[in-house]
Length: 449
View 1 (cartoon, helix red, strand yellow):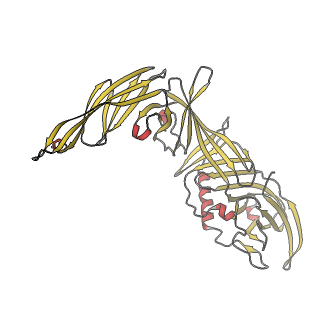
View 2 (cartoon, rainbow, N blue to C red):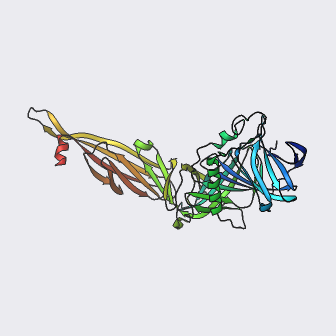
View 3 (tube, rainbow, N blue to C red):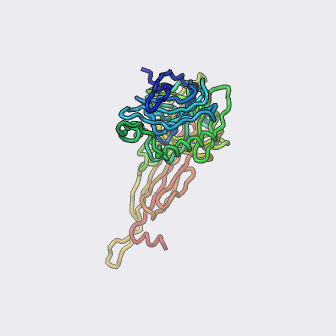
């Protein structure tokens, strides 16, 4: 069932302390509506324009927000024409009436007057997600960004211009809590019409001013295809969806954010038993800069699903996925897209012995060497070359290592960790070994000298 904000125009002629005549006039539908949705808070600024029919003199505008998450303390209205002839007074809330307010409008003109009504609401949100399609050689990737806008505000927004903001706000009040209050500012007084106090929220006004500043900094421009314009705004980034979208309450809508072709990527396979277990993990890295056909704006938090072109008919095979945090401009990101079975590492101990005993003056063993021998087999069953890192954690800072076989590049990562880096051709295998000498007892002191 379609929900919409219930509004009406009440034209009243005042005599003495009462209303001599009240006429209810149906308010025209929205001419335009604009949504600015924060990503880091349950907060949306709504700006809508309508053409009000007013008469010369005092008018009353009724606004009801039943079934929505609008914060009534944030409601504002301003004329878009004849501003010098129209005065809009504060919104007042009739006693013992829930979710309804009355604006007093004093007009020096009769006829239709365009006005802008703005307010804050909760229940609208968005999130980003991404699809990466690797080329056959997996050296480049087509990266597509999407946003999904979800509307649980209780209000349908038809033909709305939608803007999405990345960044953190400084508002302490939760709009949803304010919207759910039975009365905007507690229980109203007996027999009086309660006007919105000046506290109409310094924080509420601060949030609206902040959103207005962000919106005012954005540049809108026309494009031939529907896309999202991304503008840098200090600590924020604004994504403006070109054109308009209808977003009914209870629905979500997926929108294309950007497409970047031929993004250079690096594939790396990592084996580290203490961290990942016996499986080999695949990592995909790229940089958010112009060299990688990106770098115009930061990339919001999201999940990247990676596919590979399987044949010339554009069939895809799934490669893995990874979630990531906000990627600043010129920042490199390395994503763990999961375990693989087509690249394997098998590291097994093949020998153990002790040597080089040291004795004290009573004949007790106080120092010795442990020599452990390992065999490592790395296999690539893929039809393309792969690069594999094999990390070995030694468990001590007192060691020496002798290598043998096709071990590739070798480096000491830290005091107790080493890493072997190998490049394997398609459908190939490499084997290497190493003898690890661990110094125990007084042999450690000898090694420090």
